[in-house]
Length: 88
Image (tube, rainbow, N blue to C red):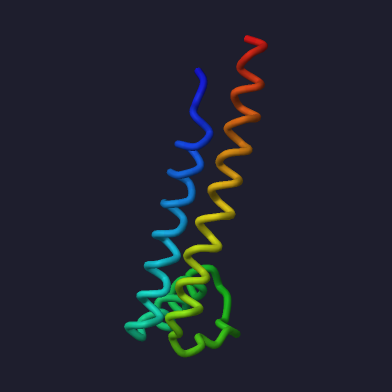
């Protein structure tokens, strides 16, 4: 089965960008530290991290960067997948 690299790239990029946008929202609301403490505690890890104050510029950069990286990864992975399928 072949897939369209642009479509897979878009899905991967949007999915991970939305995930990181939700993280930025948690930082904005002041809920990020509590969630991070909880999740790390479940893994037996003491939280050594400090959540910095929210910055819209940083949030936008995070979301755009993550989208671009995962679009490229999805695109390249789909090209590889499609190439492997030609031999079948």
